[in-house]
Structure formats: C-alpha cells, structure tokens
Amino acid sequence: MGKRLDIFLNVLINLINVSSPALLPIVEGLKALISQALETKNDVEVLPGLEAMNPESVFLKALNTVSYYEEELPRGFENTLAVISGSSKFSFNLNGLKVLLTKFFFKWEQNDLVVDTASMYQGARRKNGIQYFLDDGNNVNHFNYFTNKKTQDAILLALTSTTGRITTFKEMEIENYGALSRGVFGLDGGKLSSIKASGKKPIVLLLPGIMGSFLEKGNKPLWINYLSFAFGGLTKLKIENTDIKATGIIKTAYKDLVEYLSASYDVEAFPFDWRRPISESGSTLNQRITELQKFKQPISLVGHSMGGLVIRDMAINYPATWSWLNAQSHFKTILLGTPWMGSYRIPHVLSGMDSIIKQLDTIDFTSSRSRLINMFAQFPGLLGLLPIASGDIDFSNKKEWEVFAAATGLKWEIPGNSLLQEFSSFKRKVNSGLESLNHDNIIYVAGKDDQTVSGYMYENGQLKFQTTAEGDQSVTWETGIPKGINRQSSLYYTNATHGD
Image 1: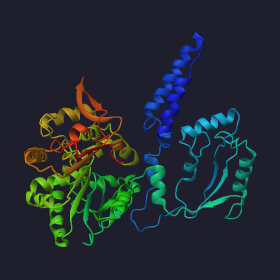
Image 2 (image 1 turned 60 degrees about the horizontal axis):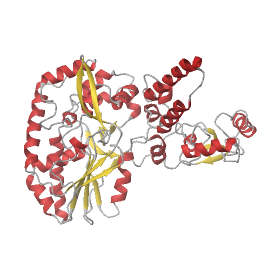
Image 3 (image 1 turned 60 degrees about the vertical axis):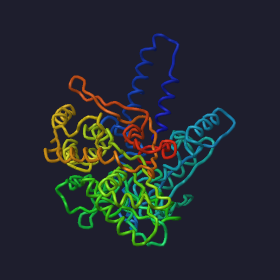
Image 4 (image 1 turned 180 degrees about the vertical axis):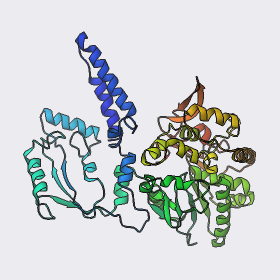
C-alpha cells in the first residue's frame, strides 16, 4: 500500500464532515483516530497489520528473501498458489466515476479500488508458477469477491480442483524473482559479485554505501540474510569477528547502475567491510587503483553514501594517487548522497528511534534493540559517518556520549576510550586534509526527501531530533555537499531519497 495509504487517509480525514453539532465530538474523535493511524502505520509495535501491507515491510523482506547469489535459483514452496485478482473497469455511471477516481489514485494502474492488481500476484515463493483468475468487469471491487458470480465460481474451482492445473485459471511463470520482488516489495538483497576490469575499456570503480556490501564468513552470507537475522544472525557481525569478508555488493541496490555503465565502461565494484575503519578501506582502494594503472585506461570513481568517504580517505591519505587520478583527461569522481562531513542519521539510529534499527529489531527475534545498538556503537566504520565539522556536536567527547545514551532510555555501552581517541584523530586528519584537497573533478549529486535529521537537543532529559527539508532522508545538503566544489558546474539535485 505504501504512500497511497497516506493519500487515502488524508483524503478521508478531509471528507469527514457533519452539520449536526451533536455529532461533532464523534467526528473529531474519528479524525484523531485516523490521523494517529496515519502517523503510526509503519510502526510494527503499534499497527503490525498495516505495517505488513507496506511494500517496505520487514515481514515481507523475511518472507521473500532474494536469493543470496547471482547464479542461484530461488527456492519455493511445493504447494500451489491460486490467486483471485480483480481490476475495476470504467463505465458511464456512478461506479464508473469511482473507478475513474481510483485509476487516478493508482496512477492509472490496474486495481480493484483498494489494491493494485500487480501486487495480488505476490506472496511467498512457489516452486511452480502462480495460477490466477482475473475478473476485470465493471462491477469488480475489493468488497465484491464473495458476491460476484464470476469470482464465486473461481473460488469454488480452486478449492475443489483435484488436478495440478485449475481450469479457467491462467498460469504466471515467475522467471526473475529478484527483479519482481524489487519492484513490488522494495527488497534489498542478493549478491552481485565484483567483476575485475578487463582493461579493454575505460574503468569505473563503484563503491557502495554503508550496508551496501555483501559480507560473508566462511562462504556463508551474514549481510544481507533476512532469515538468519530472525534467529540472531545479526549479532555475528560484531566487530570482534575479524574473519568476515566483503565479497560483493547488494544486487538489488546496484545492479541497474552497473548494467547501465557497463555499456561504455569496465565497471568494477569495490565492496568493503563497512564495520571496519574507513581508513582500512581507503588503503585497499589505493592499492586497487595502483594495480589498475597497468591497463593504461582512464579510471573514474563513483561513490554512493559511505563509498564516497572511502574515496575521500584515499584522496587525503594518498595524495600521489589522487594527483595521478586528477591528471587524467576527463577524470571525474561522482558522489551520490555522500555524507562528506558526516550525518546526524547515525545518532538517530543509535537512539533506537530510526526506522532502520526498528526494522532490524523486529526481524531479530532473539536480540533486543539495546543489544543491536550496543553492537553498532562499536563499529569504527559507523562512527566514521558521524558529523565532524567544527560547529557540530563533538562525538569524540565521552561526556556527550554518556548524556546521549542516558537520554535514549535504552541500556547500551558507549564507544570505549580507544575508539573515541581514534575518532578524534580521524576527525582532525579529515578536516586538515580537506583544506588542501583538490576538489576540481568532484561532482556531487544531492537527493531530496521531505525530512532529514539535521541535529538533536535535550529537553527535560529527553532526546529531541531536528529535521530539515534540505536533504535526502539520510544526509543533509549542509553536511553532505563538499564546500570545495564548484556549485555552479559540479552540483546536481535530484528528487530521490538516499537509497534510490
């Protein structure tokens, strides 16, 4: 249902009106109830049923986990899924007017006045194709399936069929579960292995964002593995586990970009362990660029989110490599929503209020939210995404962490002294290095969303987060856009959120 539910509930609120004063308290109460439903519809702790109907639902992610590896075929249940679907047809009467309005509501896609028809063909994976009966008459709507003669007969056929093939039903073969799931459920998952550059075309190194790299331990997937998450698999990511390797990038997030760029470039994905210090990934990136120089092909860099910080680290700590890159003809570094000077979404995650931590907490039946935050707070890579500008909150200050942790109302260990000292050194080095960094060939693409966390304050010991409309949901324009770039020629805005 997603954003269309927002529209529907808002319209419903504005349509409710009565002239009788005696009914006004009831109407106002109903409006308040609908408003609260709208506000909490994606919160699994309040309205789990509505949340499960959201395309971004964590329940759907677990139910429809994309296959781990590019070459794997999805496994499915042996039993048959029979679908009775409906699509309302326009006619010149009052019902036709309702259909016309809902066609507009559903952006002219097929629907039964409540659910878009394409979504009806989903569900848990089946080994065999889905069988469906579509009724697209002018009397079809979401509430008539049990009274409509056509769909009554179809339901009876499906229930009484003794053969594998239900007569009058059509069969839908689902050949590409990854693409189908991505389109309807918005799932993130699957592994896109890194293909090494051949040296026959110009080279693009693609660096994913935080949590955008596929992590494995002994050839077993740890991130992303939704089913494993449900049984405590998330805690296997703790920083003490040093035998975890980044072996690819998240397929559903980056496959389209890789395929698009591959028409003109050798696209080599650069996965990295986003738990580890950014400096480690920056060093590895420097080594890879040095290795690729043997091909004598132009090399360009594309960094999404945290991937751009790995590029920043390499540029600051390996100035000879950065100078060589910039000396190339037509060299470009493209940053997509990179938190160049940090992001206040990281404190929002560690507060336990962010949708990311809420979803992970919901899907992990064995770990508490505090336990997950406790693990994330020890990731040097995560701390490397914190705001570091001179006017920002000083996250190298232990006292600030103590006050912050207490204000969350959760019990978790703040980063230790050594980790805070490392962050303090990291912060000074980045700020110092940026003063002389060559920004000439850096292009920044900034996204736009309704709200992006821009800071926080304390009120009566409680955390209060501030937001701005100038950001992409994760990174504000203020902390994301590098000060040193030419804003006239090297800055682009797009109407897309951080993960799009």
